[in-house]
Amino acid sequence: MKQQELQLLLFSLGNARYGIDIEQIAALTAANANPSAISLAELLSSIAFADSIYSKQLFIKQNLQTPILINEPDEVASFSIADIRILPDILAISAARKGVWGLLPQGHDIIILLDLYKNQRFQQLTKMSADVNSHKQEGYHAQQS
Amino acid sequence: MIEQSLKSDNILSQIINQSLSEKIIDIDEERISLLIFKLGESLFAFYGSQAREILPFTEITWIPGATAQLPGVVNIRGDVAAVLELTQVLNIHRIDSNLSGTFLIMVRVGDGRTGILVDSIVDVVEIPVSEAVQILPTLDERFKQFAVSQFAYKTAMVTILDAAQIIEQAIS
Image (cartoon, each protein chain N blue to C red):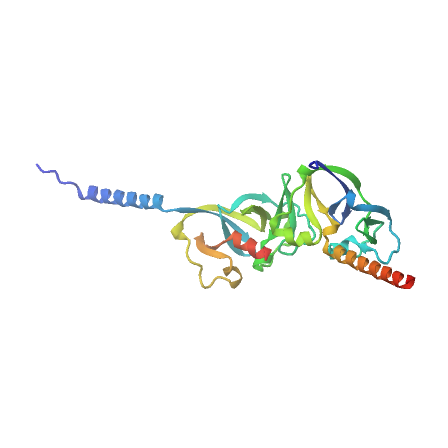
């Protein structure tokens, strides 16, 4: 069955508004001094906001070991799939590497849709977490035997 | 009595014929429509067939992966178009860093629509094809890569740029 709507968690970084499919989110908690956390600015290579102070951390289902630091979310809202616009060809490749998969015009603004599973930096971190877990398990099994 | 035509009539007739033949040449010669714009101190033009719309400056939304040449996207009546900063592509210093007085020339290349940021719109003209001359050897090296030809406009030379080539360069 064709999907008609998408529920997005909306939040801002600087002047830009971002939306993440809530199905990717495992949890949203207050930010703490988690050394493995990474800021959204770092994931998006947005140097201008590298020193931002974040109030929340977002746990993505694919990689619970690497929470993503974000600002206070604006809201969770439903949007029609028909309103989503694909990226202009000229920007598609570079933006896709950062996990941008679509744009949602809203009035005069544009919400940037992020798929963190497609973000190259997050993919690397996910792979590293998986490797660490696999080594831990190998060590555990070696101890057991 | 044989009527002799007056010399003045002959001359007039000659002038009229000459003028008619010139008109015929004008009508027959293919004309091109050009949109002239200013960037820094230079005048450039895009073919009318490439430039579809002119918009006053619209707020640019930065998106991850954007670059100095491609600073983001704009929302145009609920649709989204990429923005290309032509000063960056042509390596021109923008006199006024405030973009609010600039314009976006909307260009369609292939399936994509791109807004090319320019300082000001100067004119829309139609010229006979023969008036577009080969690019002069004195043309700035920065512009030669994208220049198709040049033509005289008032007291200045205007360089016609190929929008498709500029966009290809920005992608690469």
